[in-house]
Length: 354
Image (tube, rainbow, N blue to C red; front, side, top):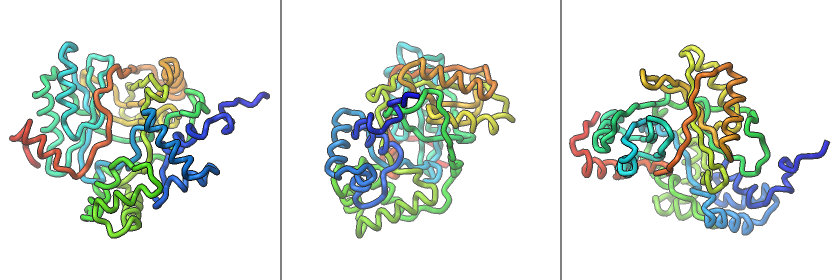
């Protein structure tokens, strides 16, 4: 049988291999780019050049820590909202102005604005969302917090080495559900440092450690490893710009599943490589879908191929697919800043504290 070039590393450019690696894990060591270079048999300068080129071409959005909001004491949720289509851009701008909103998309559904929001300790998620509902003149708003997480790990197939319906092993840890231990002052300083974009230099963590008053880069990295072991930090990795990387189809497939079947079927859905997120969320009379799967493909055909494979594997037939049509905001939440209080002062001075 002729060997498929998609599975031949020699057919993939070093830059693409570096991009694929950055999505998975960046070593928490003083010289992470050198460690990556050694894995690939490259010089550190070559990896630095590739990373900078990926940023210059806008393929690479950010290199930073991914934190578990609940483990940091934050509350978060996906939110579905319905707006008059003629007013949605203005409404989306208001929603995006909130510092806790990390992702904000227009999707092709009656619920046409979808965003994720996180609020720090001392702030009410429900009151904040209600304030956004009223300020943005939403027709209806539905809170859709995570009830059970089956997968959270965006890794786009930039090397083109797997089929749209390929399966993969997944060992996704359960969400902590809350802080496992009180965060120390040093923990909070580490979070502030690690949430910033990693510089493209030989010793990129040095500047972050100095800015947050760590005695040494080793102290920062030791704290980072401790946060990772405790589940407060999921991983340190890169985020790829989907559309720029050729993944123009961003489909959110949502499924009608009986309550007792979610725990069994969720891991099956999560096992598909094209599925980056898989969650169980609450239902409403006007929203009957309980399992959510985010599917990324180079085309709508790729997304449908994965959906068809999920249907075959689970026996489910009641579903909808919502495609993003406008990306209003996409960035990681910045934790432990004064931005929430400032937003409250400007937009919601009477917000209820809990």
